[in-house]
Length: 190
View 1: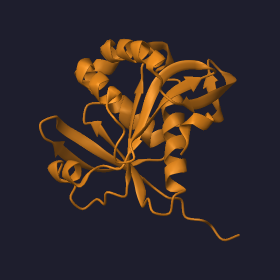
View 2: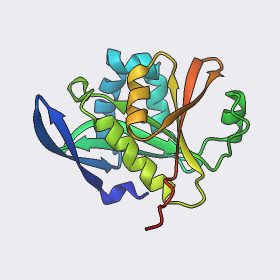
View 3: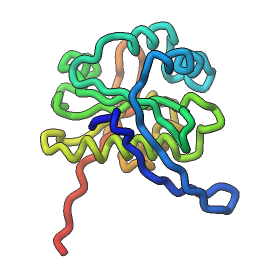
View 4: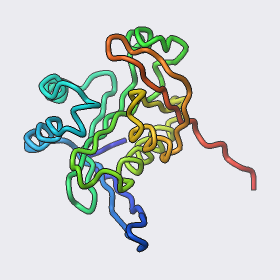
């Protein structure tokens, strides 16, 4: 998926009984975005799931390897979060006890940094957009996400985007996680 092309979709949500149409976009992260991302990483609602902000900033500044992709999530032109997707390495999967999973899968991570954008369906819409694009590649057998066992908001966002719980696993030294997966939709004959 080419993020620089400004991948967008319109998303309908219900808020206080009325229908709202929101334009959701994914765009490349630039150096100008780093101060905003650092603020998001310091926020209490992000820090609990993402951990050490400094370590995450170093990761963002690192080179993109192994097909790693990342994008800013924009809702109605406002930057509200990040989404990452990549092929996990064999070592990462093996350490987590997920040796049966192929490195051809795509692993998705997401962060909604703006607190007032949490709970609006933006995260699940961004996840769905990345997942559908990844699954259009026939070499990707499925997409996956790993959510901390206690991070029910993340689990709900992935479930809303068509993921299902596959299993729990121990991601040493980070603790217990839920593996969520989404397979390609089977085409129905008409």
